[in-house]
Image (cartoon, rainbow, N blue to C red; front, side):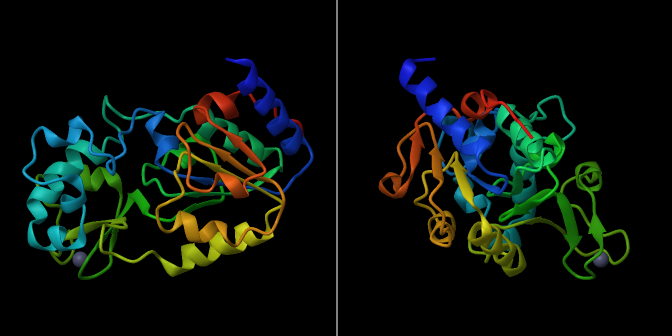
Length: 251
Ligand SMILES: [Zn+2]
């Protein structure tokens, strides 16, 4: 770790020590450090076996029109829960759970659907894009767990009415859940310290949500540069797992 990064982590430690009202907002970068590819970045993995780009497959219209092909991709690339390729929470997820347990962090807001914050032990989590762990029948609304979806061959169908089971994740062309958005906005408005990690901040809804923050402890942690560094009180260009992993939790 170079000296500049060390100094910045020391500054982050100081800011965290001085508050018990932190909200964390995380993007895809939090999950990529657990080995989950960011399907928004066109990397090779996704382009090998499919006739369409991931943005097309993971869209509402594609789901409706081509459900079998959607599920082929979804089960192979997204739904890794419980398989040998199942991702594990990384140091960022674990540290956030620890900060919440110590009474210092009030909420995690995430754009990821992989359930890793839950698995790391976080309790108050606002999943802006839903989660793979919830699934429901499009006709009768019955809920199904992830094992049910995995056990179905091809397109999962409801065991009551035969309707198509859809993951409770926000696909492209779909709107965000307003309740989750409202909860996230309230958490950000009331936060003393806002830590944003693993997102470039240029994508909706991240960019808009941050405008609700009124405090003077805005921290950005991202490997690359973000679109909003000028307004931040501390910018750390480093891997989020390494940065948060270095924080000591004092209650
Ligand atoms: Zn049904």
